Image (cartoon, rainbow, N blue to C red; front, side, top):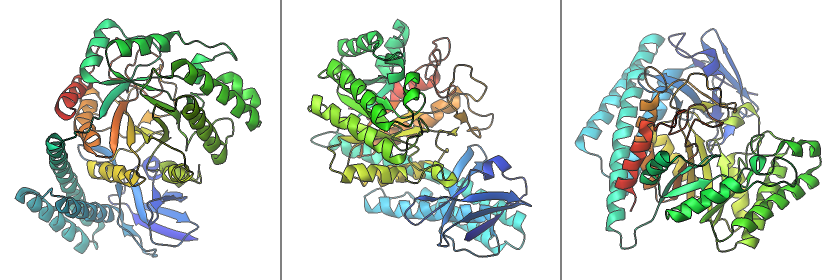
Length: 495
């Protein structure tokens, strides 16, 4: 039994709820199942392993909200580590490593960046050498974290601009896709005009739960008209997911077959076959299955979800071999593994499918940022960049399916478990914060060579939706500032 302990100073720096979301990460960047206890200002994590590990925990940073920070690799010891000092040490080490890596690629830091790095390192040195006074050490460490995160934003922006310059000089420029999910209804004319300014693609949802509410009775009217609208305006169609492996994607009537996987597989196969036959030749990309790695529905095991995803993909490829087909994974950092909800990490799920010989055209990563549960912790730009690089090592194009909150008040039309967690800036989540986040991170995703497309998961808040206040259009069908921001991103970053 392994034990790692962290002293929280000052005592109220993180809440018990926040501490409960901490987890340990192994050398392969895969979370370990950990049992968390927060008592007497000490955060304790126990696990079956005794190897060195990194701690990841949402940590409140002034002006940024709860940002998931990670320590460096730590050995087990009886004396508790100073949490804030180790988080600062981990972030500055990561920042140094990334700056060195990008310098090799030709993105050299400016003198102002090196000066900021020296200042952050100096603050960390003060924190490390004053640990006899935990509160003083933590105060210096917090300043180091703040300085490091500000510097991360600056060097990521420099990295993005470098990639954009190289792309413009390329003889064969890469055509990336920026789109949004059209939702369950047709767009109003004024919203449609704004959509076409911001996006060159649309995600037409083919939610089994909505299309076949009663067994054998299909309703394709909305999807038919949405695909027709896309063709009329010359934008690409990303269709799906055909199977979304959670309670919000599968029809209610399927519940009577719980425990009978063969029948579930048969019904799912019939639906996928019917959908692909109807729309083959009319879509540009098939999203065959989503939430492949995580979704509590019908007591499906990891193996069951893999088999459903593979069947959906094989049917799609057989009926429409000319159209690219992808599979989508939720929570790509694998936060859910820390509580033991699943045995396989999302990257392991994807690796199994890639090694199986499936002719995947790409992998989708679902980032419901700032939501918990059923979402991903808020992370800084360096961490997001490294996550994309890690998934890019599979050698397949990536598709980012993105959701960001614009408010944290109750939302009567939201049916999912996910709720905005920890705010983003002073005052919590709001439309301005949503715009600011997308203005910084959407270009990062689009600039990455491995990323083929970015799809925003929820266009509007007027209809029933999974994540509260995540739409780009509010309940009254009025565009939020983020929609205009994405139009600017498209104009600047897409060819």
